[in-house]
Image (cartoon, rainbow, N blue to C red):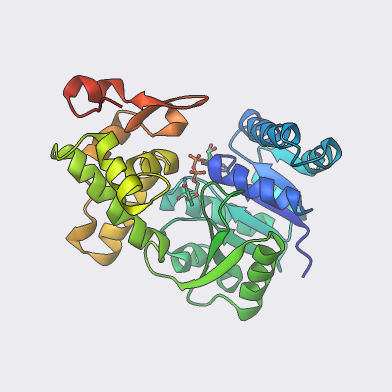
Length: 303
Ligand SMILES: NC(=O)c1ccc[n+]([C@@H]2O[C@H](COP(=O)([O-])OP(=O)(O)OC[C@H]3O[C@@H](n4cnc5c(N)ncnc54)[C@H](O)[C@@H]3O)[C@@H](O)[C@H]2O)c1
C-alpha cells in the first residue's frame, strides 16, 4: 500500500513534530486542527524550526521551502479522503480520540491505516470505535519528535501483521527506531516514566525539596538530561495527569494515584511550557525560573 499522503490530526506539539518529520522524509502531509487558524499556526511553527535549521546551516533554503510546500493545513478531517494513513495526535482524552477515530474511519479510504499517538490509552479500545480494527495501530512518538529516535509500535488485539509491517517501514523511513510493545496501559514508556514524574511531584508537595532541587537530584545524580519536573512541564501537565489517570484506572493499582498538586496545577491552567507556567515558568526563549506562585508559597526554589 502506498502511504505517501498522510493526515496528522492535531497540530499541537506532537502533531507538529510528526508532521515535520514526515514532510522532511518526503511525505505529503495534511495537518488538521479544530480551526484553520490553529492548523496554519502549526505549519508556521514548523516553518520556524526549519528557518532555524537553515540559519545553522543544517538545511538548505530550497529543502526547507520544498518541505513546507508538502504541508497542507486544514480544519476538516474530511481531508483524510485522499490519504492512506492518518496519525491522530489530539489530546489524551478517550472521548475526544474516539470521536476523531470515528470521523477518520468515515473519511479514509477502506484500505487506509489509522494510527494513534496516544501515550497510554488502549489501542484495542480506539480500534473498536472503528469498522476497521485490524487496520488500527499505536505509533507512539516521543517528544520532541524531530530529536528522539524511538517510536513505540503498539499492536491492538487484532492489528493485522501487514499493518504492523507498514507502520514499521514508515518509522524506519523516518530514520527512527521502532520498538514493539503490547497494548497495556502506558505501554513501556509511560508505565515506567510516569511513576517517576508523579513521585517527583509528591516530593515537591510534601516539601521534601524545592522543584529545582528535586530536578537537580535526577540531573546531577542520575545523569538524566532533564529533571522529572522540567520533563513534566515539557510533556504538558494535563497530558501527565491524563496518563496517570489511565494507569491508575487501567491497573487498579494505588501506586499510580496522581499527586493532588499535579491535579491542582492542571485546574489552575498551569500546563507547563505550552501555557508558560508549570513547575517552572517559561518565556518564549526557554525556562525563566521557578513559578512565581511556587516561590510565594515556599514550594519554589532559589533557581
Ligand atoms: N506531550 C508529549 O510529550 C507527548 C509525547 C508522546 C505522546 N503524546 C500524546 O500525543 C497526543 C497529543 O499531545 P500534545 O502534547 O501534542 O497535545 P497538545 O495539547 O499540544 O495538542 C493537541 C492538539 O489537538 C488539537 N485538537 C483537539 N481536538 C481536535 C480534533 N477533534 N481534531 C483535530 N485536532 C484537535 C488541539 O487544538 C491541539 O492543537 C496525546 O495523546 C498525548 O498523550 C504526548
